[in-house]
Image 1 (spheres, rainbow, N blue to C red):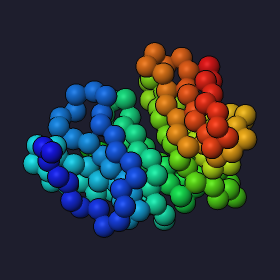
Image 2 (cartoon, rainbow, N blue to C red; image 1 turned 90 degrees about the horizontal axis):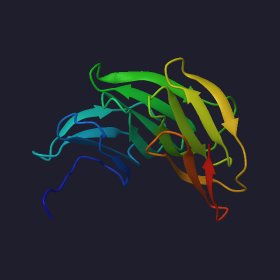
Image 3 (cartoon, one colour; image 1 turned 180 degrees about the vertical axis):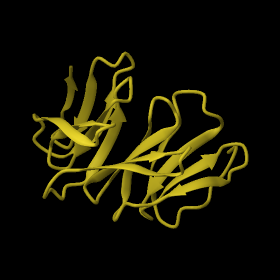
Image 4 (cartoon, rainbow, N blue to C red; image 1 turned 90 degrees about the vertical axis):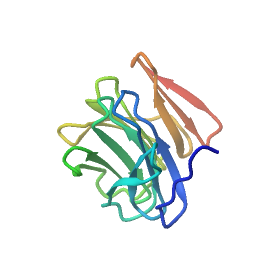
Length: 167
């Protein structure tokens, strides 16, 4: 073991490291409803973000490395800006209380994909904070999702025992 990180006061469900070179940091999220930013070199928490009303299930850095998204059991996704040290957007579906289990950005970061417990993928405009479209097809909750490295597709995994590629 190289380093141990202590700071969450509940189970930790998600971690992510930036794709770009933004320094020696990573993010985590968990049952304490907080997303924490860590310094890999010192093992210290350098920023803490709150706003969710339930467990954070997933975290993902924006492609530019200056922001990150979270998905929660409170049925919302949130966008946090590291430089501004605050939440900048909430992505919520009206009258839906299904958890968000996976989030990822398009290559440019303009689109945020969110996999929900209601078997759907929400496609959000990350700047305008509005839902652009919805992808249907799974027959059980989406457990995770990722965009392809070239940005041409997303891959979703589900409790329906399938993996789907969307392009």
